[in-house]
Image 1 (cartoon, rainbow, N blue to C red):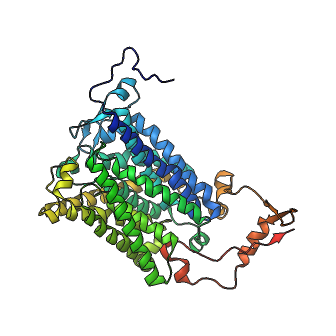
Image 2: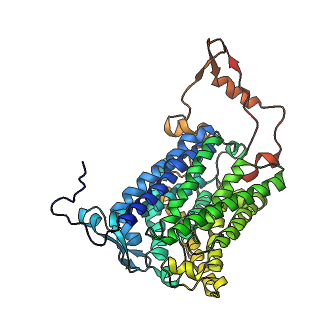
Image 3: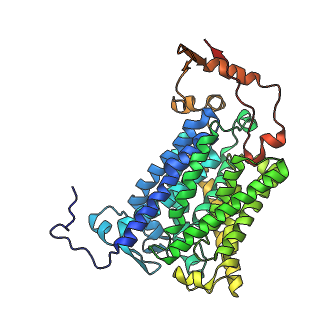
Length: 489
């Protein structure tokens, strides 16, 4: 049981700001909820029923695995004393003295008014969600054992490099690249690695690519809602203090997201003739991603501009280029992570170079004299350099890691064709809806059942009116016909 009075032998340090510490832990917890249960639930709902468990488990596993690697050596590689030009010296953060000590980023010369344990946890949830996002490109076919090996290797050789280079005093930090909360470190890297990794792993089974209808759209909505609200911590926590700029970041995040969602929905109506809830979720995500590198350094009108762009450019990328260019047909990026994270992340970083304000940069503790709108055209090319480094690094290291797993460790990257036809039961011996018959009450109170086996048969027979290709596969996912259920008394 805790004691309100500090125990004998421990003196509360003068540097501890309890308000900053409370907000940082709250912000970190909001980001954690984005992964678990946010993306766990979203992935379980957006995939076909036979892949619900596997998809949710990939996210669930990544969250746990990242934390252990993070406290053993990952945090210090990303945020510790510089070891080599691209990362810090590996080391653990498990000692009680280390955890109680003041947080600092030694290579960047920054300190925070709360303990290092708070910063370790806050940065962990960002590292974890990067792998969870990337999993969206591999769903529906990646061998789970290969994923178990891939997560710690990619965290070690890719994520820590980007985090140190951009946030913790590395060369891009010194160059002046602005990445407020991970537009490059998290979204551009996961989008790039996801797309390249999907190409190396190979496609899903043809039947899964042809019929991509979500098994539970309401689950998708629940996950999306957690994702949106959780982003208040995602961007609001990155001033590392409960200050005025945190409020700016939270407000701009929501402005851009709302504008992006509305823009995507309007385009759906104009092109497809009806609004799509899956499309609205895609627009929400691209808005959240695009604002991330800019959240606290741009003005509110800049957030509106960015929202219009993030709701339209990735829409074109996904719904037009994604269907017409052979590259996107060849690479099976399951949830379109390249569009929602790589394209939107690049767009957000580039627009940061244009829309950053002098006042916003100063409030965030940067010496950058704003972006192009403030007369600093240099910031645009600096942002481009940062994007090119993250893209190039992940294009090189992601396939190297996957080929190491496949050819050196001899672990297949893709499930067998027979297992792909089965899904969850083959991969885990479990099913999302673990029943053969569902009890149902008649209006007279007599028990009856829905025979799920017959439901499958009826579903295979299909309906006389199939949706058009335009309607069924817009926004990367289908919205096909209702299931024909035959009730058995």
